Length: 432
Image 1 (spheres, rainbow, N blue to C red):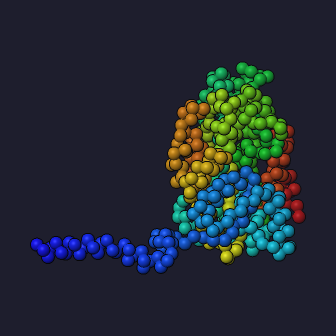
Image 2: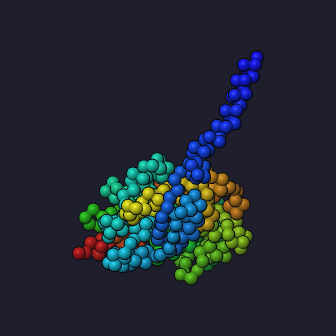
Image 3: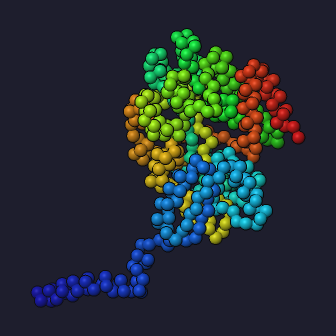
């Protein structure tokens, strides 16, 4: 019995002194937190150039990342696309340093890669570390010749936003609108009841071409292809522009003026609906006056019953500049920003930005029901479109060519034959 007690005493004594021995051996005069279960902190400076609309989002995520890495400084500077292009040229000629990250529209990735072929890092191996978290079609949009030159950040899904008060007044149920033919029939119904009053849809097509671009995405087509020469896809363009012209010919469109707020115009009853994105929903949620109206969001009408009705815009991409000393910290920050829950929720609340990581759509805010939208989980409803979208390839000159094609659309709206308009536009775009 005594031997058992002695062994118990010895066991308790060893247990009491082992932590002290462990601390002394491991710390060696340093805090234990530097040795036990502590990942090495990142150091240095990261310079980011971003679009003005995205500065607050990136700054917030950078602050969270810096809390975990206090010796890492992240500076975020807002620049327009024109300013980025100009500053890159200036810094290149002066032999100065480029930023570490450039954030811009997804359509600009191929432009930067061609204009500055040694500027961007191929981040394909880093994207693989994210597994299957990113939407496959978004990955393809930032890839050139099987190399990935950016991380796709957001998806910019689009919906048709209805003034529900007006819809109820005119006995129109947006859920019954399945196709563009249905949409136009409801417009005829609206016109018959109030020919000089409310229009079916408000657009700013003469400058944005939003409906034209959205319809082409519904038809799984880009605005053009460029395989040595620029070709406008005839069948898809014909289908889209025929419907748009019909809307204008029947007087169903209210063309927005530059100074007009589209949400205010919709609220005051000038039009029944508009093309909207997450930013539009965010503005309604933040504005008490807009909240006094009931709203309804629905998918785009399809071209045929059961056809594709998911539509996303360009979204934004994060390009990494080749800098061997800082690339490790830069890449870890981007992976953090793409996958961090708190950052994702801030992006959504701050700007209505929908991430390109669909696993995050399960976060609570995405699934909140909203009184302003008839108890619909509006954020989840919008976000889920991204799973059904298709790849669009953005070429080097996409931005300038798309502006020219919006003029093609305007020519058709004003009465020019579509086939002749397509042919003359192709000739114009392919001039040496």
